Length: 362
Image (cartoon, rainbow, N blue to C red; front, side, top):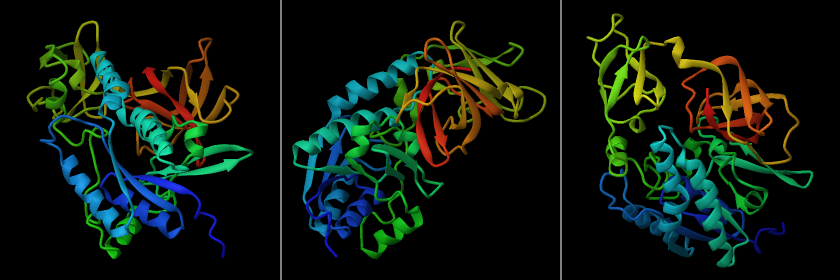
């Protein structure tokens, strides 16, 4: 059978993790010309990360040596700071909770990395994301990964037609167990390496300490739903809606003995509102968004579809309405827990990701 891929050069974004390692292997088996690129995107000392960038690079080199493919390295730290991290800090200063991974994909992995790969002669790039790309009626669609536990289309909903046309997701039809088995069978050093967690490219850290190095602490009151003072907080930026851990409110506050959760942030008063147990104040049935981004032709509104307000949430039925400013009002069939301003809501039609928007208020 004729190899249709032999003239297609693909550069894999090789992070030093198991997913990107197996991605490179699968592309080689499919007959592509494969090279890899390791991106360094954060210049600060790696102390506190689960796995340092130095170790990641060493693991990436081990994989490319085993596969006998070329490894490029590049530093996108300035791009990451300008295009992702400054926005991240601005949102936290406003008391919102942004999702930097989404912007990181749009601006870095499928932005400057794609541009650089093309300059190196690549026809396409590939990453270890669990998602799929399909072409229908001349346009590209973003599809969910078949492994529901790992589907990452939520993080990719800002990709445009050009980015999708130049991208490959070889793991889209795989599950994590199979990926690790493939890595083990091929003797990859990344086979048992833990999945990366934390902020995109920055890694796993004690988040409040990390954020405190960039944002000043602004003490304010923590109050219950009646406005009764409980204790002081160190700054609204250090908390998110629905948060339980880190409040340090013992059983002596309140009567039920149930755990406390963040229900709201009152920016003007610099107050953090907390409630006990699965309180109704944690649930809202509607939310309003910024102007949406649609991957394909914008749908006719109003319309019904499914939506996620956070990664790994099961899609929820909703109605999408549009106001005169082209922003959206979403009405869910059932109230949703911990709707969080600054986070993204992403829309789906069965397995097809339609696009998304930033949650502005509830």
